[in-house]
Amino acid sequence: MPRLPRIRTNTATDTASILPLRGQGRRSSPATKDERLFRRQSRKSINNPQVGQFRERNPESIPGLSRSRRQKHLGRDRDRNPLQRPVSHHRRVPSRPRHQSRGRPPSLNLDRTAVQIAKDLKQVVFIGAYAAIQYGVARSTRDIDIALATPKTDEEFERLGYNTYQERGKKVIRTRNGIKIDVYTKDVSGILIREIFASALTVRKADYPIRIMCLEALLLAKMRAGRPQDNDDIRQLCKLRGKAIRWELVESMARGLETIQLRQYVSALS
Image (cartoon, rainbow, N blue to C red):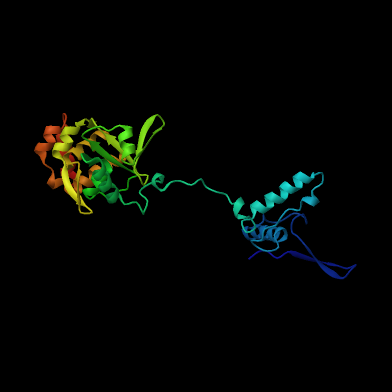
C-alpha cells in the first residue's frame, strides 16, 4: 500500500492541508515503488483528466506564433489523434503486390500456375522448391523454377502473356497473375538440362500431366547450392524419400564424394 501523506492542521484557517512528503524535512527512507507509481498516476490524471482522452494543444496559448504556424499546430493535433484523423490523412503503407510478399500467400495456387506454365511452354520441367513440395517437403516459395529444353526470347514470353523486364540488372519474368519464374536453359547446379529432361518424372495436377525434376537430381542440386533452405529441404527429402533413391542414377550425375555424402545423409535421417 502507498504510504499516507502527512497531514498538518492550519490553525489560522482551521482547515486541513495535505503536504507532500517531498521537501518536508529529511526522509527516513527512499520512496517506495508504490509511492512512485502513485505520483506518476497523479501527474497523468492532472495532464489527462480522462484516461485515453486525446489532449489537444491550443496554439492560441503559444506566444509568438504566426497564423500559418497556428494552422500547422492544429493539423498536427488532428493527425496525432487517430479518432479525429480524416481518412485522407491516415498513414498509408505502400501497397505491395500479393506475389511479392514473403512466403506463399494463402490465395496463391501453385499447382494451377504450374499447369498454366506447362500448357504455355510445352517442353518444361519444374525444379527447385516446387519440385520439393511435390515430394512432400513442407515449405513455402515466392517463385517457380523451371528448366526449358529450348530457350525463348522476351518477345516469345510476352506473346504468351508473360511480363519480362529488368530488375537490378537481371531479367525477371512473371506470369499473368504476377508469379515470378526463374528459367534455366543450360544446367541446374551443374546438372545438364538434357539429363534433367531424361530423368524427369510425370505427375498429374488438375488432371493435366506436368514434369518435375527427379529426386536424385533434386538432392544433388540442393547439396551443391548449400543454402540454409536447401539444407533443410535435403533433410526432409531424406526422411521422406530416402528409401526410394535410385543410387545408380545418383552415381551417373554425382561428382567426387557426393554419392558417399548423400548416403551418409540418408542413413542418418531415413
